[in-house]
Image 1 (cartoon, rainbow, N blue to C red):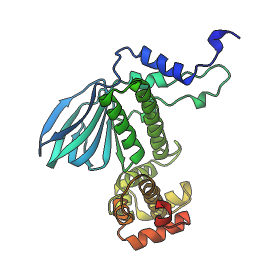
Image 2: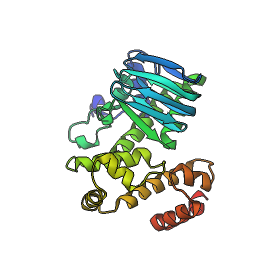
Image 3: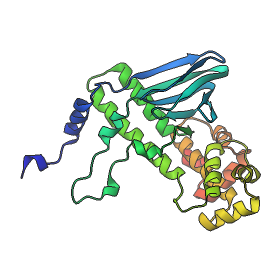
Image 4: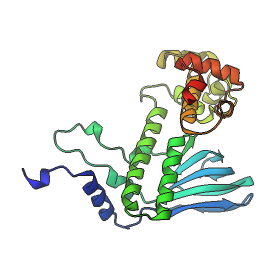
Length: 290
């Protein structure tokens, strides 16, 4: 067999990626940083992908055409060449920051070999769909992956570069899943897209169907018809489904109490949370946490 056609071992693949990084830097910024109330930074742009996890407090990211507020536990992903200004909230904020060049992700996007399904090609930066900013709420998996990258870059234990590359691959897959879940088929109604996006970004707040319909610019009756036609469920059922999915993630991956998770995911009472949870999963929150 031709040696060039032999598959790489995982170790050889990691060696190849780390060796081919032009800058030889796995990240340009990796740190925890605090800002005093109202402190600003920017406006500026850069070639790096910037990730900020809000560890404490709140902040506002000001883009050219919109302002987006981030609170404790939320993640912002700013794509390259996006002009932005950061402003700390009224009580200040503490961030976990990670910034790296897109070439790292491009090295993980392997071109499929002949005879393979191109749909199985590894996801790349294009999965972010041309968005300037991605807001992620209550995603423990993405937060922990970013934390592992920062920890490894700070400690620099033997072969940390290889582990960081693997964590970048994990990060890319989790973002791909998140964006894939957030997107609807291209043929779906524009108003439905707006409604779904609003629910996914605000499920943790005390929102209702009136709020969703108003944001989408349609009547509640038309909203219900859209959800029934395209998603085969009522808007409230979809909202509760998103909330339950997030609560399962928190039950499995955090030490938060059931009551804390209930309110974190937008439910207004533990009793209602438990009832909806049982309806959708067949189990109680306590059983999942065990």
